[in-house]
Image (cartoon, rainbow over all chains, first blue to last red; front, side, top):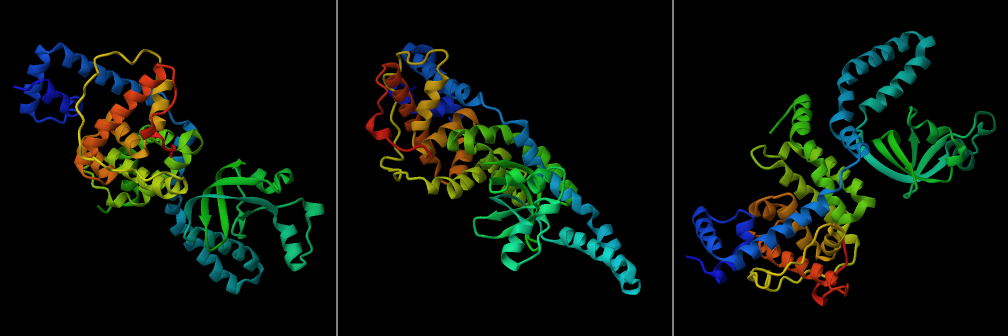
Length: 206
Length: 185
């Protein structure tokens, strides 16, 4: 038979359901007869409930749930189309050898294929938005067409690497809104490492 | 366990994704609201990457918490200054005395949360895994990568610290007992 001292040493195990069935029966027998120990168990259970209530009030946003789904089970579904796409691109490439007039179109398709076949992975990338053409002008004297065509946003990460932002519905602002140039952004998406490109799922301007 | 792409996604959706709210709750208590989303997302990215190694006969939630803890340690905790946790008397259990008086009242989530935030991080994590997530001590030991005896001791001492802090707030003193002075991580 347990006494007060015994039971107060194993109260955590009791309330957490960690006692053996035999010990649990003994604990129950003592608690049935001891008001003080019953009160202590009640306090302990109230504390546990208070912790549950305090912590349990927070729920993730649907945005977070979408982000997690996009970067896990959803994003790799696209590769199921890789095989036919790659096959078509290869066919175009072969045709291009014999038909110079479609060589340019084939080159574009091959570029698309390169992105698909790259070792892409989900990523969160942070950096500063810069104009791609202005960068090329500064570094290589490229004749930038920004005054006519507008700036073209690109991402420079803290290690100095420049990432091309792939065109898409979500990335449109990042690429074409010149007011964002110079701002720091955090991009969630897929990174095509060898192609130095990033596909944007979502972003935040910091 | 090798799974084809479709099966893997289906299993992940069925076994792992439903635990997102639980991981978010924990993340908020570890890194605060600003970084909780990032911690959860990185946890799931890593879980997805290593999902082949998950043993479906075990508790997926516990597996995810273990990953979350590892991500938290590698990305957040080590960048903060925290005094090393002294494990003196780690295996000792202190009996529950003087718990007959009432120190909890309704609508005190703010005090409880404040008290939780002042617990040493490993105690906080252990208490949350036991009281909120209701993992067994064995599962908590696997998440925390420590012996079950250490889990028992942390549950015991953590609850006593919590109660003492809440009592202190109730007395309106607000100062922290010396042994609890640590930075939130």
